Amino acid sequence: MSPFDAGLRREQGMVTMQDVAERAGVAKSTVSRVLSGKVRISQRTRERVLAAVAELGFRPNGLAQALATQSANAVGLVVSNFEGPYFGRLLRTLAKTVEEAGKQLMVTDGHDDPQKEAAAVELLVDRRCDAIILYSRFMSEADLTALSARLPVPLVVMNRPLPDQPERCVVFQQARSTQAAMTHLIALGHRQIACISGPLHTLTARQRLAAYRAALTEAGLPVTETLEAEGNNLVDGGYRACRSLLSRGVRFTALFACNDDMAIGALRALQEAGLKVPEQVSLFGFDDAPAGAYLLPALSTVHLPIEQMAAAAVHQALALAAGQPVAPLAPFDGILRLRESVAPPCSR
Image 1 (cartoon, one colour):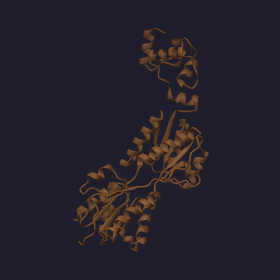
Image 2: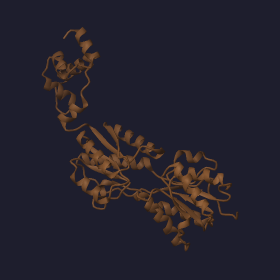
Image 3: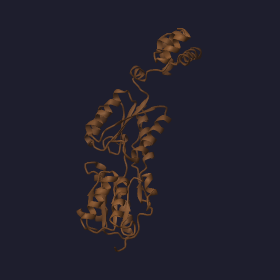
Image 4: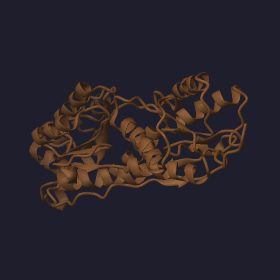
């Protein structure tokens, strides 16, 4: 192949492994072995092949390589959706940890639907991922266990416990962290504490609401349904849920929102109603979204160690993919971030 022809084929994206083989004076199979890096090749032959690759501008077809080697040298990730700072932090850490391991991260969306989550996992299996991480909100425990058992590659589940496969899940102490926030509010003297939950068809929302109720019961306080409103995990949902609470005419001196986005919406609703935070209503969030520290007043919240959980999920998945023995991971705990939005109650 002349330099002119090589340049033209490179510009048109037509350079093939056979072209590299002819330029290097070796068999096509030798080029494949050099590029895979899995077979010992003499240094001289390796240098000739790599020189031809550089000269011709050859770029291996990733899908073809995956089919040939049965591995895309990648970790797959399925998340329930891409909204909010929570998933931004999750994706950044997962991508960084996977890249540090010399692999790529393939990401797809489960669209908050159990069937679509399962289909997304199967898609990543077809793409020859070495392991898959699934952040699920909606699949049942039985379905998650069955899915893990039938896959040809390891599956690590975030946000959901798998009692039958504890080494394949990364979980957070939802109840203990919620109760820590409630205990702090009660210790300050609050007795009428309202709650905005997440969507109650999700396990996380049900766990946090149950922990809110348990904390009231343990303190000898009544559980009052009129002090509870369901949100949607988004700012607008928190705003509407808080307005609903206020419209009921029931008094509360503190409000626990089950994530920071809903707390931000609730703050706007409280301010529109002429209520000062924290002088008249204390406000507590959950997740420790970066924006919370810059609100007026700065939001008290529960720090959720997303980065540590994400890194642990990657390390667990890669160890399983390598056939290494792994032990179950201890559940992760939250940390209270106490800021300006919480204070002892006063009459209003």
